[in-house]
Length: 315
Picture (cartoon, rainbow, N blue to C red):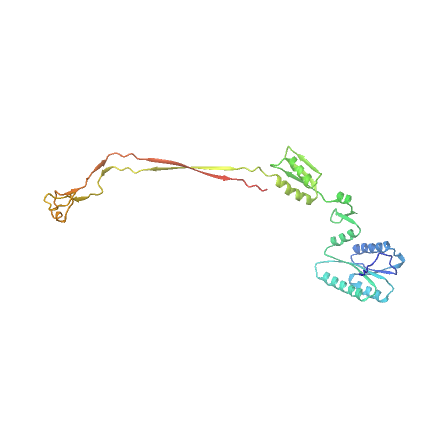
């Protein structure tokens, strides 16, 4: 059978030591209050708690080791705050404090709790303290911050809001208002149909989303533009005036009167070739014509070229 070994939240027995550093006291004092509150919530009496203070977080490991070696404590709680600066000092201190307190926790029979904050900024440390106590903050000025209970009602009252005006060109203001109410749930809206404007008050995140939604709605209607070009082509024939001479002539031999041949159908024999003269050689017809006038032919044709253009639609 599988056996499970787990801790419980029963009231702890014995004494407890809290080691807190004074450096960055505006943070460590809140950590101390939280530790005391947690021990009290688990039933530890005030007389069973000892609080030790050291100058800074670097002195915590030495104090924790001496308390663990002396004995008499069921647990030791280490509290401090290290905030990164402009030099590597933060890396050296945080590394040494973490490793040395960890070595005490591994080598001692006493339970050691590590509560040293290592933050990049003061704001990060403050947010951790506020989250531990279920609190929220709103920065009012450079040196003033408002602290309030981190509940849903208070978050709505103290959240950062901005006002943004949308100038519409193509979309109806009522349509844009309906879109923002449906998608973002925005309630603070004002519509001016006369000037086609929409005023919105909400968080910066919602305003950025509203800008994208309104831009997708406020687009011109798609149109098709036809550009037509007409091209006219003309052609003319050359005139031909003057005398038209024959381009060829042919000669043929006929049967002479004194032919010795006896072939049928008036055929020639070889002896007839030698008997040919100007009276027996036939010439084809030779015709010469004169062109006095010639009509010039002109032909014209029209070609239509059409180009279709569609305006760019950002949606």
